[in-house]
Length: 120
Image (cartoon, rainbow, N blue to C red; front, side, top):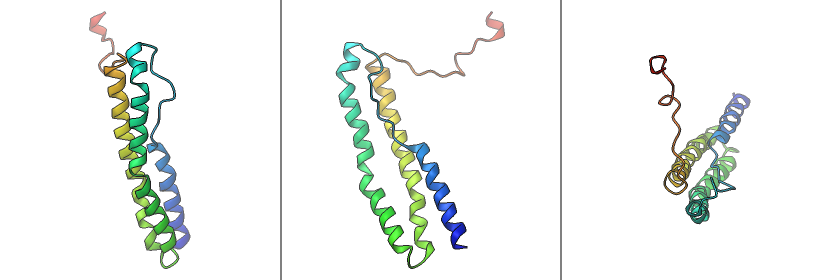
């Protein structure tokens, strides 16, 4: 039972990499307004990541320390992918807003931009 439980937790934590916060390394384009707000946006995205860093660290550390008593104490580690996914959603919203308002890059929705056969 114990090795299967450990494998499940390891697999679920590997899925947490999907929810990682992506920080932009370059501005979306070279317009003056986009460049002016680049560092502010980068700082906001970094702050989203740093907000829950202490919480994630405590959850993982305490879960690993308490796992010596029983494997049931590893269950709080399962919350880390959810916390990271919430951070990713918030940072993606900040980046979309910056690209839309400051850089003039519109959101692309492929479902709305398809050419219909009747439009030809």
